Length: 289
Image 1 (cartoon, rainbow, N blue to C red):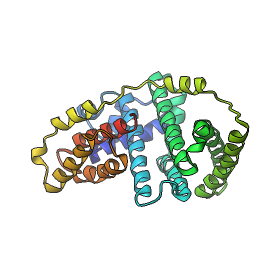
Image 2: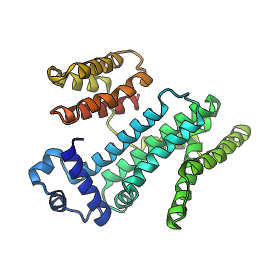
Image 3: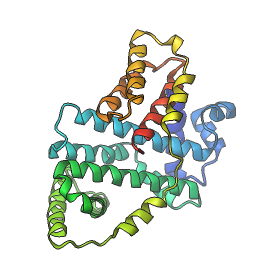
C-alpha cells in the first residue's frame, strides 16, 4: 500500500472507530483525508472495500512479523511461538482495531462480518498448525479444539485487564495460558474427550466462504507484471519467487521470506501497488493449499 493510499486508509480507520462504519460516509473520508472522490475510487471500489483492505493489510503485516520472528529458529521453539502469538495482538492494540471489530459486528454489513469471521478462522488454523509443530503431531486430533479454548481464555483475560485498566505483560499472560492449554491437551489425549467433534469443526470451517486463489491465478498475475522496469535486485527476487512457485511442492520456508524484501524493493515506485497485489495473492495461495 503506497503512502497516499495508506493515508486515506488511516483517515478512514479513525472515522470508522469514532463514528462507526454505517455512520461514516465516503464524503467524511474525503474531507478527513483531504482528497477528491476520484482519488478515493482510484484506491477503493467502495467503503466496504476500504475496510477489507485495512484488515488484509493488518493480516499481511502480522504474517511478515511472524515470519521474521521464526527465521533461523527451531519450529518447536515455545518462546518463539509465544512471541508470534503476541504479534497480532500488539498490532491490533497499536491501531486500536478492537473498536473497528466492534463497529463491524454491530453493523448490518453481512460481507464485513463474514470477512471478520474469515480472519478469525485463519488465525485459529495458523495457531493450530503452530501448536502441533511446538507440541508434536500427537496432539493433532485435539489441536483445533484446544486453540478454541486457548483463544477464549486469552480474549477474556485481556478484556478484564483492559476494562479494569490493569497493567500486564502480554507474553507472560500468553505463557501462563499456554501452560494451562498444555495440561488440557494431556487430559484430552488421556481421556479421549472432545467438546467439538469433526463434523462440527468441518461445518464451522465451511461457513467461511472465500474464493480460492490458484497457482494459475498467481502465475498469470506474474506474467502481467512489467518486469522490464525491474532493476537487478528486484529481478533476482522475482526470479527466485517464480522458481519456488513452479515447484511441485512449494517450500513455504523458502518462499515466504522472499516476499518482504521484494515488497520493499518496489516501495515508492510505479510498481508498488501491483507488486503488493502479487504478494497478497501468493500469501493467500500458500495458506490455502
